[in-house]
Amino acid sequence: MTHALTTATAANTTDAEPAIVFDRVGVTYGRGRKTTVALADFNLRVAAGETVALLGPSGSGKSTALKALAGFVRPSMGSVRLSGRDVTHLSPAKRGIGVVVQSYALFPHMRVHDNVAFGLKSHRVPRNEIDARVTEALDMVGMGAYAKRLPRELSGGQQQRVAIARALAIRPKVLLLDEPLAALDAQLRQSMLGELQQLRKALPDTAMLYVTHDQAEALALADRIAVMRDARLVDIDTARKLWQTPSTDFTASFLGGANLLPCTVNHVSGTAALVTVGEHTLRAEAPAPGVGRPDWVPNAEARLCVRPHTIGICALTERDALRGTVTAAVWKGASTRLHLEVAGIPGELTADVLGHTELEVGSFVGVRFPDPAGVLIPPGIGTDAAAGESEVRA
Ligand code: ADP
Ligand code: MG
Image (cartoon, rainbow, N blue to C red; front, top):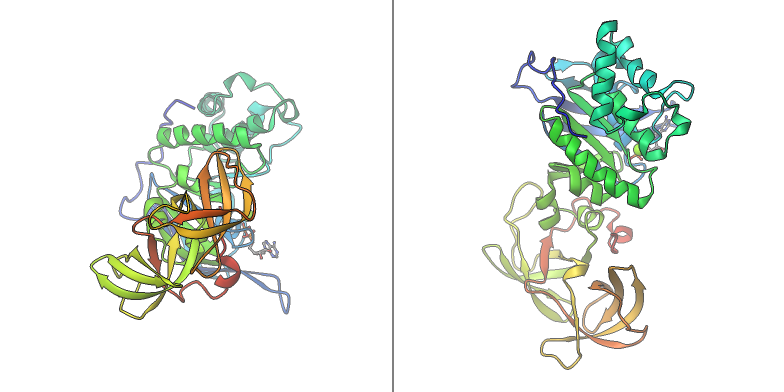
């Protein structure tokens, strides 16, 4: 994926309006008693050239958001705009959006060339231009040599490249990708992720909305990540900010995995705090107050988010080591995930240590928190069902 795609249509729009706007969009499926609210009060803006990942568990409304923008479902409330133009009631074909879905959705009886040309014909691109546009799009995804093949003569990864080429052929200013790598095996997913990064660079003016339930894809591709849960957007920020200072338990767990330890704030000075966790006093980062984030005050209840990879395992005899008991050890190849009971800390702790450890279930180890031990997360917001969510997910 190398050639830059010249977007002939990109110039003649207003720069002031974001490429994509969701304005209080609601989508409800079904009628009568069997209704599902799949999207509620959804607001999002994506600038030209920006990639936003919609990240969330299955059923959280990610695909519905994409479909509302593409025109495949009709919002029951609110509006969607493309570069300032309200397209809420426009047919999908007239929106000029490129869409790539998980299942490739190629026409099985059509050769690669014709699959890619299909959208161009319906967009009334002049006949004599079609071949050049098809070649350009196929070259972008490294599939130029496969134009005469049928989809069944291609691997899954190749089919997905063709599906991407088909979306690019119309030179869209907005590209929507719905779990495009989910059907591929792990190794292929990795290399396709690299190719998508290159493609991103080759399309500097295109706004991308990338739906995924995989945090690694979101971190690799997105400028900003919008976290979804139960039909709602619960958090949005740059990947780095969401990772470093998540404002909800849910974001902390879903993005990176986290130990979420109930704690009481003792003392705050600037962005440094002392907190009590069980029988221990630990130093913590206290992010500056902001939207959805309180001013930390003494005696406030909070949660301390401790990332599993930051917890150290050492000899029991070392200074400051807490006494831990291994309750489970799962080798994952590059790392081992330890489940620990730690004296004076309520609940179970999860630690990721490098490589393979010989630690057996039941053995005693020294456990060391980093300093500061983690970042404070306010209680309440987005934590209504946090009990079931608060264990580590990574
Ligand atoms: P995601 O893409 O995050 O997995 P979806 O947007 O596909 O989530 O679905 C959100 C919710 O809407 C889910 O509860 C799902 O079961 C429901 N849903 C999706 N499509 C339909 C449909 N066509 N009819 C009824 N319910 C639907
Ligand atoms: Mg989906």
